Amino acid sequence: MYKLIGSKKSRAFRVLWALEELELEYEFSPVLPRSDEIRAVNPSGKVPALLVDGEVLLDSVAIIQFLADKHGKLTYPAGTIERAKQDGFTQFINDEMDGCLWTAARNTFILPEDKRIPQIKTALRWEFGRSMDVLAERLGDREWLMGDTFTIADIVAAHCGTWARGANFEISQPNVNAYIDRAVARPAWKRATDA
Image 1: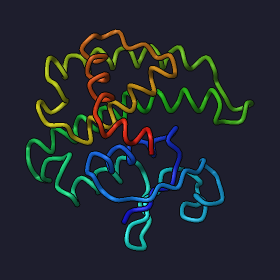
Image 2: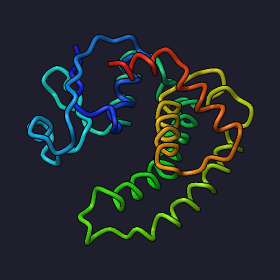
Image 3: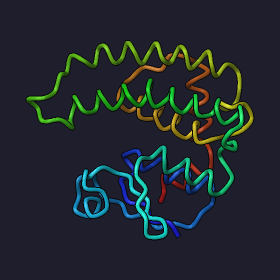
């Protein structure tokens, strides 16, 4: 049994979604970042954390890749060309989508007010838009990033897509919007939302 610590309004949702896609049993402890419960397992106070066999795993992408590898779903085998392509998508999404969104969030409500640079959001929105052009081209007319196979790269991308929509980061590319809509229509997304 896995125990996930985090908030659904954080990257912990990615782990919830992966657990539901994999149809695994888990316990979910909904806590906010910097709470006493999360600090007990992660001194930084960041979420998520996954407790596995007395060990603590941190970072949403590392956690969902671990789960996918361990259970042989949502991923291609390590050492294959397909896995390298999948990892390329995951890294692109982390760098180009998550990076912009996280920097904007930090400069909106996370950093102390005297450390925030609100003007940076203009540049971040521009950069995000360029990245969405690249994602649209790379996605093309495929159902998922890797074609017919839904992987952890799709979990990270769709999570960032919904985050972007909520943060008013424009996604003007029709195929990217349709892709996000397909992802959030998955039954496992809905189960994770209700967890």
